Amino acid sequence: MKKTLAAAGIVACLATGVAQARFVSTDPVKADPNTGQNFNRYSYANNNPYRFTDPDGRLSRGTGWTDRQWRNFDSAQQSAAGSLEKAAGRITNALESGRGLGRVERSFERTFGAGSATPENMAKAASDMGAMAAALRDTSPSAIPANGMSAQAMTAAFSNMTPSAMMGVPTTGPKQVIVNLDHAQLGNRNLVTWGVGHEMGHAVLGYKDQVFNGYPAYKFGSPDEQGSFRSLPGQQRLINPDHIMDFSR
Image (cartoon, rainbow, N blue to C red; front, side):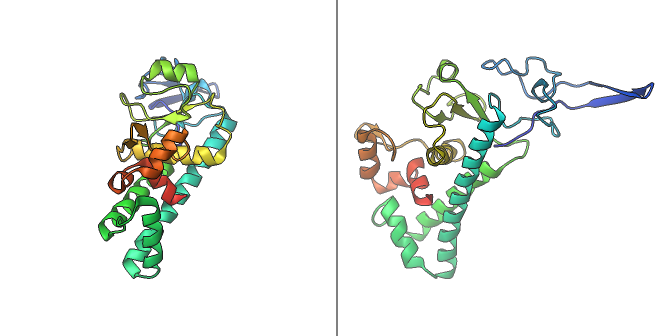
């Protein structure tokens, strides 16, 4: 989700020993109506090449961040990726070698429910976790950007988000993760790590928050949402982002 922002096609010439340059093609990233960024299609690196680099002509780490905010968020997302990779590896190694398989099966069923630890379910969960981790590690031009926004701007722009949400994936428009920079818990590394991993379940796998008795199944939600998390049937747990993160963490 870390990326760099650029415009392509620099043509440089030397005149009296001084380098002069200009862009001759527009940046492929369109204007962001929420932040005002990139309305100048010939701008470079958020108009701040001292702080940002721009090698590939695509998206950056996202808009709205201070350097310190991004370092903290990026550290959390790399922690989430590491947890997901470790969990996926634990399942895969047990399935392939048979070593510790019973222990992994018991752990799997504690999270996903009795009878859930079939080879098919375990292999699918490992694949899902690997895909989520890969997206968090991705720095390619096609990577998913994480954009920081105020609570007011976020809720004005995206109807599926509320001021209480720490982060979310819009249901329309380009695939991205929006982070609420006003959220009181944004400094809680564990919750941010959990949250960004959770959002990969939405962005990469297309999984929706599963609902039981009218409440979404969140481990760290309201008492009713926590009750839904504990009571969610097994087949729903396998596609619920919070249960995937629960196994990995």
